[in-house]
Length: 460
View 1 (cartoon, helix red, strand yellow):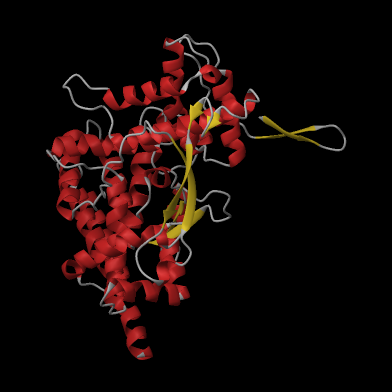
View 2: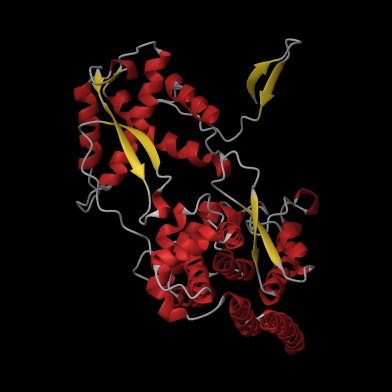
């Protein structure tokens, strides 16, 4: 716990202090200034989710400067402009054993910005008002960066961010967009599960993980935070919607969001919960200590960490022989792009500006997009609009048909799961029972889709 304030009765009021990175010098001694900086970041409200979150990223970045000062036997407050320049140049020049640069220019700049922000804290701690600045010991400049999207109406509320700059920073490298994962690569990952998994539970969990990334568009921390209760609650709904936590919503009341899911997918998730997850919980932590998270560790029964999802996808990509970059966030790109393609088709938008106007003018449409994607602003979705127009000719579907396509896709995955498990000892009787259940749930989704089309036709 951390002290927050003292009330009128002289009682110290505290706030939770968990998941704050503790920074040390390389010899193990506590680094006072660095940990004061961590507390300052806590007061700013930066995320500590998933064992440190944004605070851990900041701590990792300034750890480079901690090591530099340790090896050069220099206190932070005694750093000179030449030493900071040498520090940045060393970061940019570092090579791996193959002679390749360890980090790109943008990574060096990011580390540099974090370190300058940390050194501002050091200056305040030592009451050195001229430590950083145009005439300071470390000579810096304040630059304004305008963040805005293309278009006329879209940019009227552009964001201006002030950044501290140092002359040693390298030229920024070109921004490379991470494209959505292709359906072929998703299928390759799914095909690799059987060969890459050493246990039945891990195989089933990987199938579930891939499907969750596909149908929710969730960030890895959001997917790892889905609860068993959310799946069970969705199964009772007329139009099922799965609740998942929302990351990157600092100081917001909206800590969760919902996305529509098919009954076929819910049946697949429920089967995993009842037959695979329950056994692991019973053999590890026990039902009384079950935290209720859908994705859990096979060894401990505890919540699966977000980084494990990245490692799992990386391993599957390696087994599948995929040479291109493959990571969980690419599933999110595909989810949002497909959503926008469907909306473009539904509203018959011919240009990017037409679609932006539809989003801005249609409050209900805007709220639905924000709900399904979990984005904080429409500006952050601008890149997906361009991707959607690039792919609009490939999908050619409407929003209503998304549920139908999802039902068919869910049925296909259920059939593949039954086929794989028959090779692992599933009896014909159990296979027949599960096949019937899969067909019935798919029919429910398709019936709901047909009724939706009838209602839409009646309104027209």
